[in-house]
Image 1 (tube, rainbow, N blue to C red):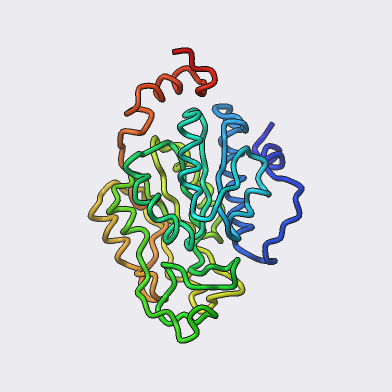
Image 2 (cartoon, one colour):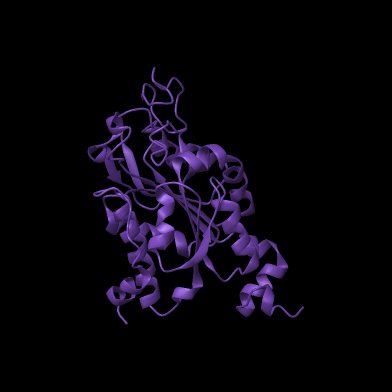
Length: 283
């Protein structure tokens, strides 16, 4: 079966309830394209993938991907994904979260996952608002953003997730533009093949809320795969998430080899080498 036929099998027949024209459709296509192309090469199977999501517009992707997984609680997709990695280190785990969940309620998990370094990918849909719950500001919302929750405007400076990830020692850090789904698919394949924890932030617009921050495509440019920490910080400093000034680097902003969780834990390494989960572990 070629990649296009496999891609059809990865989709579902569930009615899609995203807003018409939402960039989430493109992110979905990027994921399907990346997974299908990997399967078509014959080195992985559809059943080797597993997904976790939490709550939000992004999380509806669970219904539209024909992949095993767990639809979890708000902000809890990472520990759920880690549990899948512990149960079967042979799985290729993809965890989908929004900027509201991962950088607020889920921040504690984000702080520690790089230390553990399990073989899994965090895919963050970042539109700088809690869009499912009518547009409250998130930790990446720009100052001045007015919403029902903050009618006078957001007063706090947004965090810079790329700099946070670098500071946490995460070994693979990438950023994509949702509208460039071919590039996003290529980055996702690199993230999935990375030996350890990979963080991919996808910048997207929301068509309904926080529209003032939309339309940043002209600020975006692509970078070559980078392993230099100082260069990664330089790229991260080019845009502070607080407006539409500066440059937004896209691609693998930082990638270095690190000891993964299954390399640190002998029992997990044994499971992986034998191609089984705990159910098939004899010793």
